[in-house]
Image (cartoon, rainbow, N blue to C red; front, top):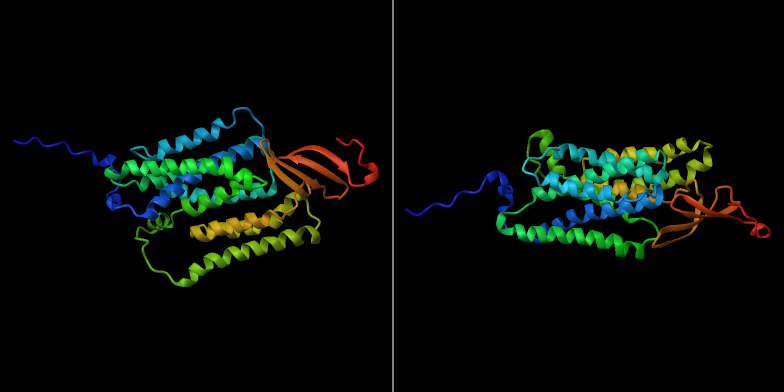
Length: 328
């Protein structure tokens, strides 16, 4: 008798649907899904350490969450449901967008927890899609090579390209939008909710609305940024709610369509950058090894300020006769 080789444990193998030959678009998806969590991890670290709290070894926490997400999604038995993660991601993205636009820094511990939670959920969702997309065993070496390449590209983008191109930590909002575009798989949510296949045709109008709606969100936010502070004398909390509250709610209502939701979130972040925060209008900004430095004009129009993150490093009178008076 010829001895028979033992059959592998089927529970440890990727789904059979992934046995088909790999397409170039599939490889690009692997790279993108690995790129986004890597970029987000570094962006969260840069933002929190420069704008929220300069705490020693704070970078250990986002790195630990990033690595833990790999452990959880590539485990034999998943603890967290992909459906619940896909529902949490839009909620976290909208809440984090409001925090970024409002420049909230207090209470520090709560701000840190919210940023870390979003990073963890986004990494679980993106890495979970990677785990589900694993090919057959014959292609696993190539799969992990592309996965590693995507992570390296995310690090290079944040460490080398972003500081040279952007004068602010723009890579963080970009990472949030990309996580929503790539991480939310509408087919998973529909199949889980209805128990049916999501492969169905749809008219061209909903697809057009995926682009029209974000434009409307952006224009509406620009109008609110320009008119609400001038027409109404409101406390800062109510002013922020009036300017960003309605666009944020409307954006969240589109979370069942990843393209529309991600683009609307990007439009909200882009339009919200026109808002003049508590530090006043930015006159000049530049970025170096230590972070982002801004020269701002205070809301009263009396001083110029030198700002690093949320720290005021100096003030100077606008009046030339009082330039040399010490203020801070």
